[in-house]
Structure formats: structure tokens, C-alpha cells
Length: 379
Ligand SMILES: Nc1ncnc2c1ncn2[C@@H]1O[C@H](COP(=O)(O)OP(=O)(O)O)[C@@H](O)[C@H]1O
Ligand SMILES: [Mg+2]
Image (cartoon, rainbow, N blue to C red):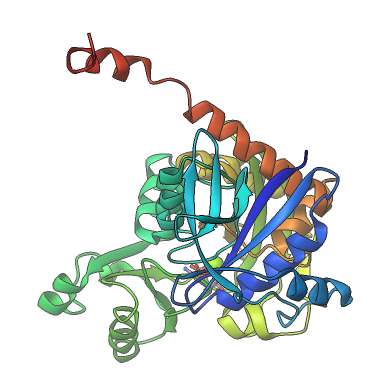
């Protein structure tokens, strides 16, 4: 019998459409000899919908789209909930009686807050079902740019000079934050928890900085200010695996203008990616090594795309790590693995295998816990 894979996608506004595009690409590429997809959309309001076969068949019948994200699933269909069916499955149901489908494993393809930050992962942990990608803690650290930087610094990885503060400290001290003066201009102002360049500004003077912090505070109560790395090339690398993961070929994103904003990321038809990037062998090697260490620093599992800034003087800065990077067939993460002789379909299969591996490791009988609880158990 084939393994039933719950493909979850959509989620809150911001990165909803990108996720819908990733999900259609995965449904198309899934190895049907091994896997049967159960496609579950998450609406912008975070409600679950079982996508009807009719819609899937219609979308699948169309030729796969190009780079833009208009070739995508929609989070529509029967309102459903997920319930636990231990030891290792979940059911998709309407209320407590009508079970519509069973899942052996979930492949979450959501980006940003809720789907990539440990919230959905926590829900799947509570259900006791295996799921692809990072666990709760790694997802949360990977989404929080401040926590992520601290994890990187603890491992001695090369981050950009930065300062962070919460809204109370901002309202008390304004731009007299300790250390802020030491950051050269331009600076980048970022909400700690977000993605897809949303809420991020590049600023060149004090007035712009103040406006940018106020804007970033609209997305999160903690804000990061980073020194801008000027004339930097944007280099990205894929990591895949468990405790001893592998790094992929290295890619480059050609950014038009000053920085890689939302419009360029998702609305542009031009393909900005080069794989492999034209880099000295030693630099590509360093990118791959730092990528693996960055993944391990956050306690990653499954996958992450690690993003760097490489400046004209030859310095490499670790910018960030994404635990659920864009995942259409044209996205950087699948592309760097294609260039490493791992085709898209096999990459998806590998991530599902890793989901089961992590679940098995975590489901070992809790021996110590059982012993310590004995006094309260049946005698
Ligand atoms: N310190 C920096 N120096 C130069 N460019 C930066 C810096 N930080 C961010 N950027 C630019 O802004 C983009 C988005 O920032 P990033 O931290 O990657 O946020 P997101 O999680 O939204 O992708 C980057 O791809 C890069 O173009
Ligand atoms: Mg980024």
C-alpha cells in the first residue's frame, strides 16, 4: 500500500501564494509509485480545507507554469480538522465521525509565521504524526532573526554586525540604542519574525531609520538593525539531512537594484538564479561548510536553505537560514539539489524518508520518564 502524504500549504497572507505554488509543484512531482497525496489547504484565516480531487485534476491537467507564482493550488474545499490516530498517523475528518482520509506523514509547505515557525510543527507533534522538515525548536529559531543570530554567534559563524531591541526599549531610548552608532550606513531594519522581505527597509539616514523601525514594529515587537553589506552578491546553499546533513551546489541570486525585495522575489518573470554560482572553489567550499554548521547550530532536520552575502572584498557573511524555502520546481532549493544530481522527485522522497526517520528517533519509549513515573502508576 502506498504511503499517504498530507501536503499542507497556504497559510497566513504574506507568503500564502508562494506556498500554493510550491504545493502544486510537489503534488505534480510526487512519486506516485510510493506515495498518495492528500492535499490540505490552510486558508489565510488558518482553517483547514480538503482540496477536492476535481480541482487537483484540473490543475494537474494544465502544463506546469513558468517562474511566476500564478500556477498554484487554492486553499479551498471541505472544511476539515486533523485528529490523532496513534501511534503514527493522523486522520482528516469532519467533526469526530466522518473520516475523509488518513495520513501517514505530513509535508508542510507553508512559509513564514504559523507554518514555518514551529506553530504548525507543534500541532503535528501533538497529533503524533511524522512530518517533513525541521521540528518545533529549529523552526522557531530559524524564523526568529534574533534567536537565529544568537545561535550562529554561539557557533562562531560570520554574521553581519547588528543590534536588536524590543518595542519598550525603542519607546524609551529611540535611536540611542547601545551599539547602534557603531553600525555603518546603509542599514537594514527588519522585524525579528517575518519573511519574504516583508516589513524590511534599507535606510541611509536617521529619519529613514526611525520610520523603518516604526514600520517593522507593525510586524513584530522585536526589531533588528543590521549594517548593510554594500555591493554584496547573494549566495545560497541547500542543506539536506539529519544530524550529519549534506550541502548542495552553491547558487547565486542576481538582485536588481539595491536589495532583494518582495516584488523581485515573487512577482518578477525574470530568472535571477545561477547554479552553480561563479565563485572561487575555496569560497564555494566555505559556503557549503558554513551552511552545514548553520543548520546544526539551529538543530535543523530535513532541509534548509542558507543565505549569504559575499562582498567585493571577498568576505562572506551568513545572512539567514530558511527552514521552508520556496519549493517550486523553479525555486533555488530544488535547483541547487538538481545541480547536485538529486532530481526534484527524489528530493521530495528523501524529505519524506527523513520525516519518518526523525519520527522514529523521537518515538523511542521514554525509559527514564517511565521509571520516574512508576510510583504513581499501577503497582
Ligand atoms: N545586512 C545586509 N546587507 C545587505 N543587504 C541585506 C542585508 N540584510 C538584508 N539584505 C537584503 O534584504 C533581503 C531580505 O533580507 P533577509 O534578511 O534575507 O529577509 P527575509 O527573511 O525577508 O528574506 C536580502 O535578500 C538582501 O537583498
Ligand atoms: Mg532572505
